[in-house]
Image 1 (cartoon, rainbow, N blue to C red):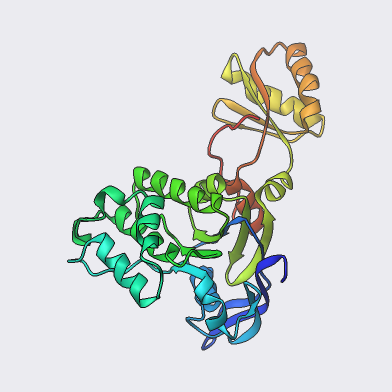
Image 2 (cartoon, rainbow, N blue to C red; image 1 turned 180 degrees about the vertical axis):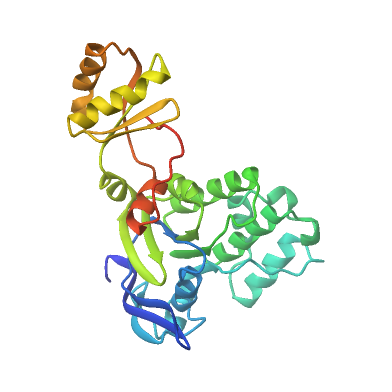
Length: 310
């Protein structure tokens, strides 16, 4: 079997004149939690639906769990998925809904209690689903996807519409699932969440693949920066101008100075500030965020979420 759980070649989907997905070559390694990111309408859901056999590609092909994309019946029994939100019988309890799905799938009933525990719904399993919050329904949807004990879990925007507590709960669930050995392929537009949960990322924009690989590799590809703060914030423009004279690009954002320079330039920066009468009260290297790396890669501009020292 290939080292890749998902592998596609030229995967494309057209709806009339619109190319929703255009010649995408995916290579998702086994054992990763891969974040599938891109703006709304980028082609994430369409790609996932093709991978699950819900729609047919217009061109291209590939494999999922070593089986041809054209024969989804061969890999779907080992795949769990939640696409565009879960659907349940509202009058039935959470446990009854899962038990029904287990019977239909000829899955041992013991799996019902096991997956309820994984998603932290054991205490509410006897309540009707109509009494569940949105976050609880999302977790029940993941429980349903986990029933067959899948090797691959595909989730489309599982944190969509959740409050901060719900997002934190979903993060915990995905970490638990990954810790049990499944490969997770999860789409999201919340880059900060992807950065916390995933160790692999796929970027898609306007149906085209922009990047795939480890998050560390994507972030490391960004230009190194130093982050500095002066005792008097009004001194920062003067220091930035001096750095510009030395061909060291620098910019001031509020009370912070960002300098395009490697970590070993920190001592020189400190000395330069002292020479022109500026006292620095903070000086550190700065790791780019996934959000910044994403916008740099897609040409969407730079978004600063505040200092992040390393």
